[in-house]
Length: 108
Image (cartoon, rainbow, N blue to C red):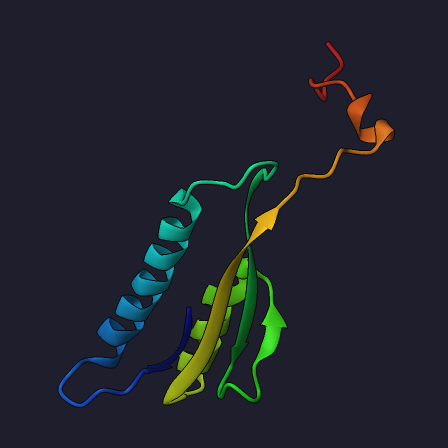
């Protein structure tokens, strides 16, 4: 998904437009995660960019997208650009020190 979202649309309440944009982004992410995984892939990872324009977009983590959208809305921004691209992800093994910790933190 590479898209510029308008937050101020004539005839529509700004808060409803903001919620619709967030819903569309969440729906896209869910749809991408449902795709069949290629052989040898553990999960779908995402490369994300966010900015006011495509040229000014910076790399952000998927978990910070909603906070970035809220920041633009709070500053009364008119639009923003978001880029979310799915890529194959591979889980990394935990370090040995983490694997030896007991499951129960009380030690019983």
